[in-house]
Image (cartoon, rainbow, N blue to C red):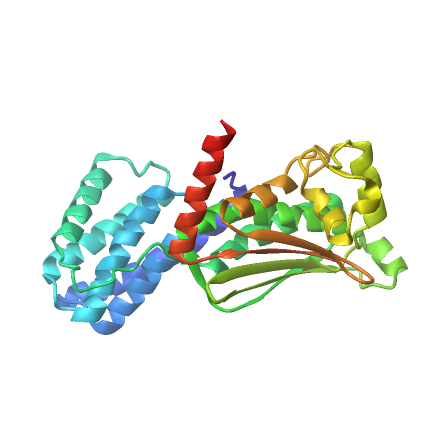
Length: 342
């Protein structure tokens, strides 16, 4: 995934603040010679947050380090701060602080010192008996996608001369790290379409009796192991007649025009090659992008629903099974389809 300079700077600033907090905890506890429950809880939160942020940036090395440290803290939370040798734990934590700082600094995190630290951390984790545990898995908060989507909206509005606020409404849900990675691209594309095709420029919105600043709302949640994400913008509603006419001109209709139902017409915008743009810009017009949403949902065993508002805007809803068993089944089915296609 391509990461903008703004997002990377935000990541560096936020992670630096977390590492500074970690430094204060370690110096205080090192003077005493042991951790306490409060410091373990704080470190657990720090490592979890760093892991989630690094996941969004696809920094697999940092994700792995934070994941292992998170598991160690999880063990200490359950069995007590002093259930592992304190000198070894404190030494490992100080080394981890150095690792995080070096990975954020001017020199690479692949130097010899950090390589030795990674090996020592792996050895420590292997020595811990997690047999009666359920170590922290690879689940990450859905909220960790927020800065990515906010950055897309801000950047596009700046370049297109538009104004839009992004709102989130949902529970504090956690989803698998791999699933989060798969969702990043499609959700980014939906945001691009919401701003580019939906939200009008301020003058046009005022002419239509709307506030000059548009709004994009992301609703999300889990219902009986089904993850749903709905993104609605209050901009221009979908013109089904225009979509159908354009799809016909592009020769992507699979049946006569008069046989298409409204939801089928709306779904045509996800067909490869479809675009309503006469001229290509930085964000759209090539006829690729929206099909990513459809193919990703299918790969995950889910579906996509596109709906136009009654008077303004349109929404795109993704839904698919979020439990591990269903995801494994979806992956097997995808492999089967690929083999058949070949």
